[in-house]
Image (cartoon, rainbow, N blue to C red; front, side):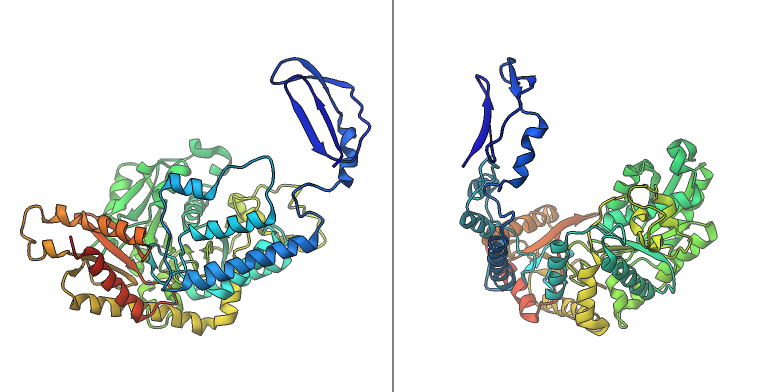
Length: 540
């Protein structure tokens, strides 16, 4: 290897290159010693363009293809085969310091050989949680759809941004078609929308749009031109509502919490009362955020009644259907979202119940006045030129706060093409059926107690260990029961047998929230869940 180098007493710089004739004409100060030294000018490096980088596959398509084939082989073996097998572990748990040592996370100046890189790929997968595993019940997403994964591989490989038709012609057209289909399921024949990086951002966009529609001057004048705005949501809402209010400068105090009934549904009469109270205090209500599929109990707010309240008071109605929106595909269960067509905006995450893969979150709008672009657009002249050779309305990037935006429509489009609407409907209906099966089996077993009869695929229950059965009247019963779920969670995770989330809720102590979402689940998996909890908790 031929190199150029220069140094002072304490520094050495070496770069791979052909032999160069240096023009040492500039004096600089060494950062370590403070002594003057001479460094090359930029023109001294021009010949480096002809050199071959070290430890890199740049310019070697054969080696690059070999590496990728090997990596894809590892993914197929470790993620798709083993990661979806009930006989394998959900995770191989390691404590943080041990995991750091096993992974060797430090980044160094020298690259590593391809064999070492492949070993690192295997290690990354080995010690990661397999969210496609049939016994991963921890989040509102799980499972692996092969067509969605194929879509993700394609979009990651193409590595384009969604902002202009110029560089993403296929995906600009595809996104609009997918959004059109989702809007039709909501009940709208027209409208607008965009894919966002998660349901929290979709909710935040809705809040910003509602504010802008009412006070468009806020885009230029900011918060100083606004009256004290307030919005309303239930106490079962997603935490992103308060986070969004804080981020947008409204403040968390602007979020008024509406009471819910025993099932976790927003109470329209209390919403009406609080709106009147806010107005009496001099605040200006501007938005109501209802929830279709709450995070813990899986409750669906009564949208028709809430829409009536919003209509009377002239308020924007946003429906956070990030979790429950996919129920719209089911003719049997879509009644849970009756009234959603009256909303102004809807957040819907197909990456959850439909298993479209992270991330796939749509914000849907009934608006046809180009509100998204008016609210967020800045008309950057270097990106959204108005004298392009095609219809510039196809450049959708000015609708969003982001500049670069990943393609999220292909994974859903390809899955829908393969499954059809009927296949996706079956997926939703089967999740309901398995949830009901689990409930019935749970009721048959000693030591299991439902928190509430579910109307969705969230099954919330306590496991009461042998030492606490029949002792509900004891004064320390709830305190002792609250410790059971954390202990069982630790045991299952460290054994790698399964993962289930738990939490307290109001006056209720810790209970398990089982999520039935993975399309590969069977009755045997529901039975395994109950059997495993009995095994793990038999000594408690």
